[in-house]
Image (cartoon, rainbow, N blue to C red; front, side, top):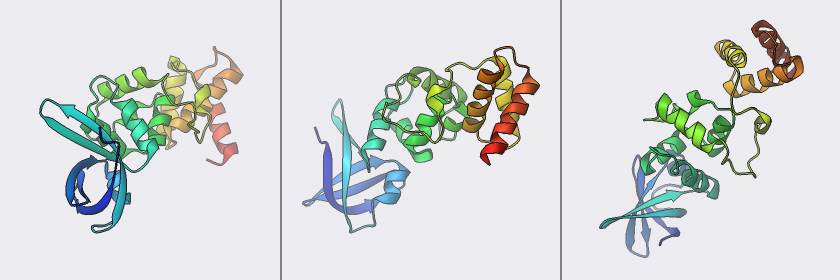
Length: 203
């Protein structure tokens, strides 16, 4: 199995590159994120490789970092997420953005990737919510957020998102507001408390 390739960039396409390794050209499928950082034609490059054998064909998928490869491996464990879909997600979103979306149960962010609809995004969130690597650090303390949001919290989050705030920020402050105010907090109180927290943080 091929795990890594180092060579000269021969050709760069929209979804692939050809890497010349000692005169042998390897066709490697990559995310646009990797392609944008790999360097120009004629430059030396190194790619981490995921090798997939199917019947009589061999497919190589390349990554510019361990983080991207690990995220790819996690994504393709989800039913309905194949190799191309995994690359599409990594083309649209950085691994950290994908992990934060999963932690916040934010399917809207995942649907930014080509071919990912609400149904598939929901499946990704459900199947991976307990599989985020423990060494991932978030810009917000999303690891303490509930995996299922109450109806009032969902409505308050939607209200803040409609006001222009990021969903992850909205989920964070509204969840904290509910913890402070209690399970019986009204929708208006959750929104008001959430806005106060966002104002104090300068968001």
